[in-house]
Length: 208
Ligand SMILES: [Zn+2]
Ligand SMILES: [Zn+2]
Image 1 (cartoon, protein in one colour):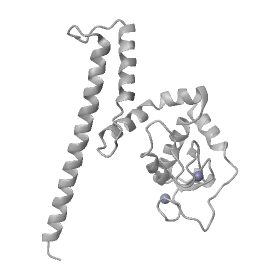
Image 2 (image 1 turned 45 degrees about the vertical axis):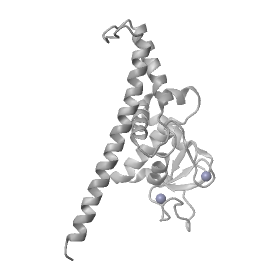
Image 3 (image 1 turned 30 degrees about the horizontal axis):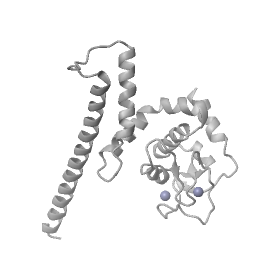
Image 4 (image 1 turned 60 degrees about the vertical axis):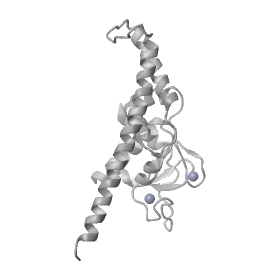
């Protein structure tokens, strides 16, 4: 089943097969590795554009760095399908997942649901990143409200609410999670900075 959806996604954009020969990737300024064309017509290395997407909002397609249009479909160069290298295969798999996320309508919604673990992983990373200004209170609290609705509807009662309404308990838990993740993110960043400083110091002491 997976294969058919993937084929449909790849076949939709068959017009242009390869990037212009004298061109280079506008993100890394090198020649293309695993070239992919956005639906706007611009070419990027597969991994470059996917990395760029990491800075976009969690559930939104990335904007083309060249023309600012939303990239909802990435079409890998046709010849890549025959390549056997693990690296190429991995990037192609990621591109397929990317394309599945931004198909419109009901299919898109269902595929988004299937990719929920990926979206949640992205959300957690964003929440831990001390550089993101958004704290995602809104998103996480909506998720908490949904969870409490399911909890109530299923007539579970394993969470001690201490007299509070279950919605409130979930809401507080959501807010606590956001704050904890942010603190963990800041701590991780500090540890990393310390390690970098240690390595730099060790490098200075070592004789040539
Ligand atoms: Zn690149
Ligand atoms: Zn573009």
